[in-house]
Length: 474
Image 1 (cartoon, one colour):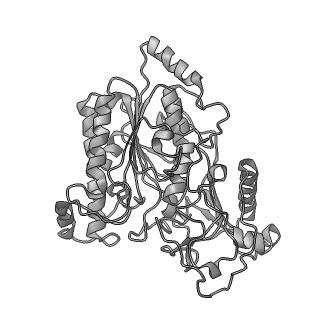
Image 2 (cartoon, rainbow, N blue to C red; image 1 turned 180 degrees about the vertical axis):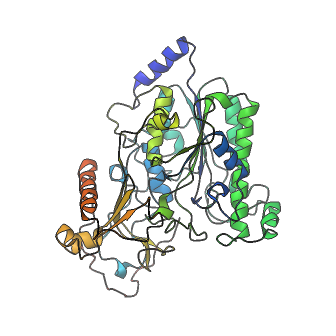
């Protein structure tokens, strides 16, 4: 359970007349880095996100902690990388044609373990009222529901079938009913610290939009990169929900004491090119993990600020604690770092590396992916400074590992400052940097107790036919 020290600190703040800031956290689903107008999309329109950019800080290197929905959320809510909670995928890590898998993947855990202390539990212990409005996606078994994991209030307009098309023209993807419920929460808790987590289903398939929004983009000239009217209309309606929340904060007089944070759970789907980024949702190239990220806190975050420091949603938990003047519960390990120094432009982060660990398979190839069968095969990725290295477990485990690293295609190395699109693999020309980052991954595995796929797949038959039906989901 969260430490009572947090509540004690909040009590001391109350005695001094100090109220910690509110947090409004808006989380999009499958909204890609290139799918917003402030990143230069030639077709999408997101005016309220542009407003947030003008009034706050835009992160050029904002990342999701994983490349698809459930593991990204599990990492963010727990503050821990995937080896510590074992939520690696949606449903299964064995997704795709089994005869094409060289290894037996590490099994997936679908529910966030009840013993994990979520940021909602930690913030509630610090005296915050906590609310979740929308997608949970981390289990609904005994002890696993949002109200079991620290949320005082929970509302989801699209339960139970979240992705099925629903003919609700005034409320596509539940955007406006979720927003309404969140606004009511803001108003009900205007006199106390709150954390409102607005977790949208938009723009995850199936795509939906208000009729008038769809007509707007049907009549708009198509861009060279983006041209799908329904995709743009769904994104536009998501942005409209953001605007309603921002207006509600202003109406309630809460703008000055509220951190607004906006980001997405992973990169955009194959329905939308993420160029200049490579790949899409489910892959660990930049298009699958780099996401729109904005923070606004009037008087604390400079208007129009731009941050180049790589940050991830694994950093949100320690950031929220720092805002509350609280500490993690006893025994809780947090893998991220508070972003307050970069938000206030008063310092730098201590850490130098970000990690992604996915020991399984995801079906459906991505744009400019590594192979024509899977979005990703088992992989661990590290970013350090401008450098990013992908280590692929099949070649590492089965084809000689480090001893054969020059020939077995087990690693790819990119310099993102010079090659944002990950076109040019430098693993053979920058061996010292390659070896340094491999060492970082090996240390990460040891530090987190990472489970690796080690068993050969007895059904492996290159270019064979599937012997079991692939699992398809988000």
